[in-house]
Image (cartoon, rainbow, N blue to C red; front, side):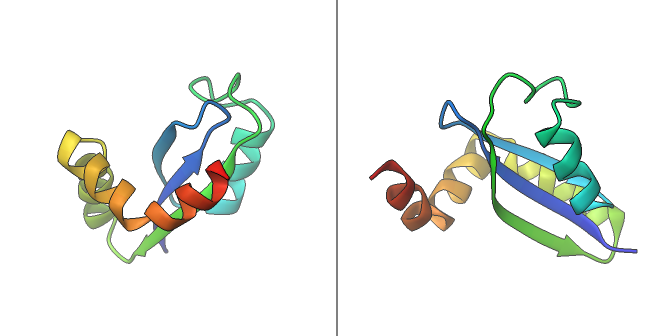
Length: 87
C-alpha cells in the first residue's frame, strides 16, 4: 500500500500539507468541503505529492514539512510553480 504526503495550494495562497493512503479519495474529500481545515479555502489545487512505501516514512516527512524549516524547503522546491500561479 502506498502512503502519500501531499501539498495543496489554497485560495488564500497558503499551502496545506497532509498525509493519506488514498490520494484520490482524500482530494475528493477536500474538494467536497469535508475536510474542516480546507473547506472554506476553495478552490484548491494539488501542487505536489510524494509517495512512500512505509507509513512511518510518510508521517515523518509530513511532520518535517510542517516545521518552519520544512515549509522553507518546500517553498524553494516548488518556487517556480508558485511564481507561475501568481502571474
